[in-house]
Amino acid sequence: MADGFQTAVTATGPAAGAPGMEYDCGFNDVVTKQAQEDIPFGRYVVFTAEGSCELPDSLAEITANDGGVALIDASKPSGVGYLAGDPVRVLRAGRVWVQTEQTVAQSNPAFVRGLIATTEKKGEFRADADTANAVAAPNVNFYIGCTGAGLAVVTVNQPKGT
Image (cartoon, rainbow, N blue to C red; front, side):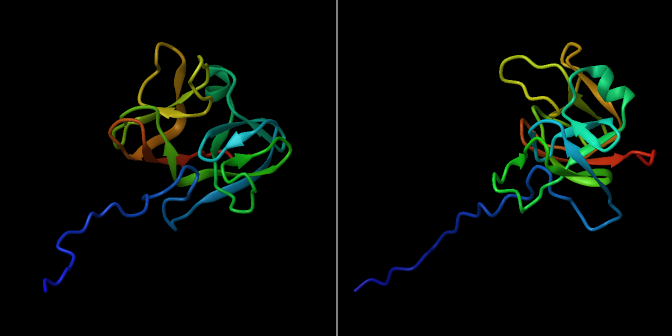
């Protein structure tokens, strides 16, 4: 009688992170703003008025306003983001996992999409301006890159205290 035993293991493992998940336990500056629209976790948001935030509607909104990245909130029933009117945890300084549209490299500026076509998503991260549809977010760089669309880590360092 032959004994059956396992001779190989396929290691897929859990995902390293998820969009909006804080990368490490270093110093993180997190503020709370009210969502002016539905905001998925891990997207770049701009502060539009005192106490509120939204996904960027234009490139000027990204460069002219303070902003940050919407963090995961496990208490949200959707599991994917905030609804309009929800309080949003926004990372203003620290490191966070984000979804990218393309390959991005460590230490490069993080571009954020402000203008969208059919399948593109406002507030998502990328490596370039995509023919003037995205702009480098002030004080945001890639800390860990990725190949192809996928998860990367950005460092956010917004100096203002809004």
